[in-house]
Length: 163
Figure 1 (cartoon, rainbow, N blue to C red):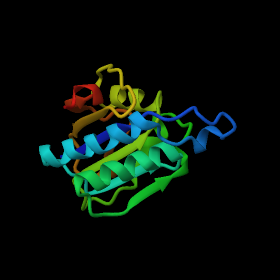
Figure 2 (cartoon, helix red, strand yellow):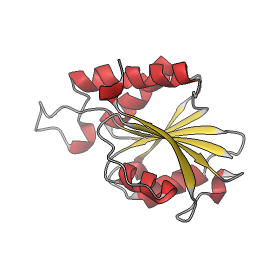
Figure 3 (cartoon, helix red, strand yellow):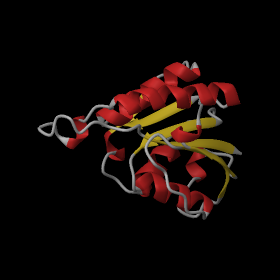
Figure 4 (cartoon, rainbow, N blue to C red):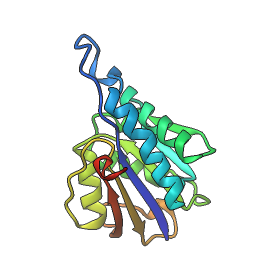
């Protein structure tokens, strides 16, 4: 059994419209919410062993803030393929994870994040910015994760629900 944490990037800024979408930074709320999600992971004792993130600035900065606040000790793997992609790209990224890792976190964008949660659990959930879903996957190897994998949704945390 593998545990998957699916995190949508924190709230981004539209303050500089000249920036390409890929380069938009986090706004004030995003910079506040991401560390709170990391603290939640630490408090819940579900610290990822590997983090894979989209290369977009807002996703990368979210992953870094969550990693730091959760006491994650590894290196964040950046994948350009997760930017402006569908859930298939996320599944492909998961399939490349080494089996020694039991808890993985993937950080990305909507609509792919909501579609991935639905694909893996059969449940539809809104995933506002910086939302985190925890899923138990009934697989022994990450390579076994595919469009037909059915996992169990353990919990979803929204930033507004955190104190």
